[in-house]
Length: 544
Image 1 (cartoon, rainbow, N blue to C red):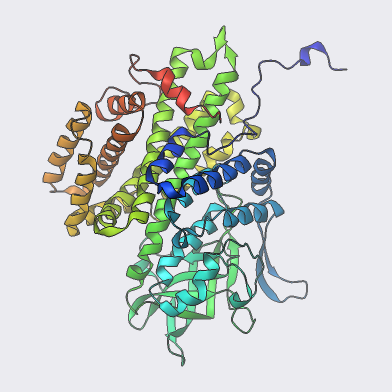
Image 2 (cartoon, rainbow, N blue to C red):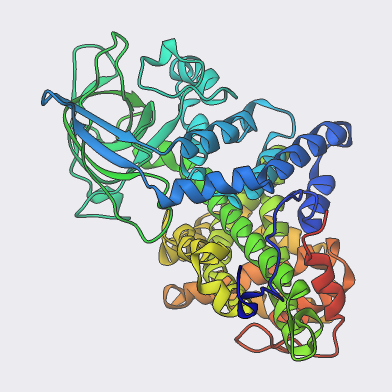
């Protein structure tokens, strides 16, 4: 029998057994706003089912197991034959299978596909972020393959399939397939034009033999990979199948798996090509232009992934403070803690609202929406992913020492939080991409200004921020040195415009005061005390 000193009191119940989608008021509102009403019942039911699965004890346990027992590389079989396979915990396959069946690779073939997928990706990230990597790259490979109708006809039905078909076999024998990507090399990193992997043309038109390496190859267990290599005509995009049509393994030498800070459930590898068979995608010498559609799609997934991590961190913090008592009352009712939670909540809602707006632009199409994406995707990728680590760390602090313990789940969020800022081009790459859009594509700035201008006159702080932004844009001398500042202001003004138009007044008021009006500090918990912070926190509380 336990002694009286071991009686457990004032501990917070686990946040489990709830609908992650329905409990997220900002996300549900965004889906309803951007979705065709005729699809409403179908999609909301689909997302709620995924939300209930995501909030279940079983699925949360899968996420924990997939990270506690990371993938293992097997370079050879027992006889010494090279096999280059990666073994995963069964929970990884369960997670990946659920993600595929939920349509996370099927956006291009379903009505309202990008909005419904974006919401699902944001929900599913909150369970386990690592399996989002192959789901994201498989989704993003589709527009690249569509540059070659023959390749698209062969691969797209498998990439957009909602069947998870694991195991290495020829693609034509599989009901579903996954894709990875290999761009960066040791000597170049983000400077992919410095790549040295060589592509030698073979006798069959459009086929090549690759020799070289990739410093980061994501999801090496995939069925195919899009890679960059130097062909006679310059840097070119290639499709490298893992297994050839006759059933033999392509030369794909996995030298080691990366030992990463976070994202530990997912394998990232260093690979070598030695006479590796590949099929050209697009024209020789236009590799970057060909693969850029994949990069843009995965950058949006970086925004979605960070928004999902922030939402889960805020949900955990608000849940903890709603139940935990200290100093004579609930933590959530303490003015200073309420300020911190509200500040975190508006950051999360701003990220979610912006991410879903960009997904809707993919669905809506049209020249105006494409121009908006050209500037808004790198802007959002720069800013939202930068905010994610700060939110995750502050949320962990809301739990105190409990938030520093693995069982709380917060350490996994903290470790994962920097990834999306680094992946697919770190902060400087995004800021410089914003500059290129401003300088080379005037239609992009016009589309951006039309978007933020829809909220003009609704909030004086937003109006002032737009005016100041226009002043900054009028003087582009020495702009590279202040590119990060400009990207930040573009993101904040766009978020402010969306919240003023679509969020509850208390959320928009708090955001504009602290982020645009200068009435907030540099740390969370410094919102003006005169705001309706209790309503902001209540809106963020994870209750279905």
